[in-house]
Image (cartoon, rainbow, N blue to C red; front, side):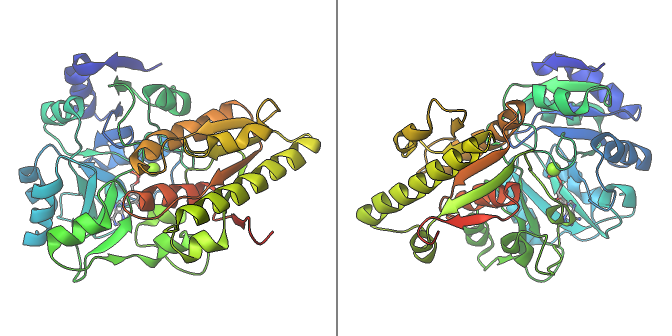
Length: 370
Ligand code: AMP
Ligand code: MG
């Protein structure tokens, strides 16, 4: 049984566990991580085993400052340093060529290493106290939504790790942005709270998008550069579909007030209809909507369905904060079908929609073409 320790109190004990080759789950501003000594192949193997994660899916190495990056990399371009100085501590993971001290067990066999400095005081103290870089993927069972609270970690990893550092619910709620700086062209491998626009502004040049992000990473014969993006991810037990309209997609969600109202009506009518159909078949259905549209789902209210409002669609960070918790609640409630509204891909919306599409296995229904 793990010890869950709140706040700063567990820092010293957690550092001792790491130094002795054990595993500690730690809070960050994105999601909870599952940490081990990044320089110890045995610790990395334990992380894969605890998560049930395929071992070709590399881990992110967490450091407490930019100076700790030097021993981990064999090349350190100025552009990568600039990103670190601008966004660290923060939700940005940077891929660089690895040095010899980083074992292939940590990098999933790759010649590159993913590095990040998280913004959480407990975790920064824990990394400093251990004096080691900490390998840490998200602290969930592989394939499940990432943990945004210590209780999620306990639910998934109970009995398989040594300790959980608990610093309450996380802020952002989806994993870090990943940018590959190991080649000529900076490439976004995973969208997160640091946006594409912020990255290209800081670098003063265009950042490419790994095609696998848009394709969903599973189908279409595209091999993602971040191996983790190819696995079914963030998945609730229920079958999930996103619902939108052709018009919203064509206009990139940039529509007039009148078009917006019409699209909201079409989407909610269709979702209400789907829920009614499922319930007639004895299936438990759930809805994901936003504050702006919640009133449109009254028809479904009071039936067997579960309606989750994930935030304001005008503020994507309010929705990333809730998404994984809501998906886990659907699992707890034994929901079998989930219908979710779709939102704009702009800014942080790209990270939100990337996770929602993956949770839905890329299934999308068009309410104006049913
Ligand atoms: P997680 O921390 O669970 O979100 O998983 C780490 C993510 O980082 C996975 O999607 C990995 O595939 C990705 N990643 C880690 N190291 C590398 C690397 N060297 N090159 C590309 N992607 C990486
Ligand atoms: Mg993960």
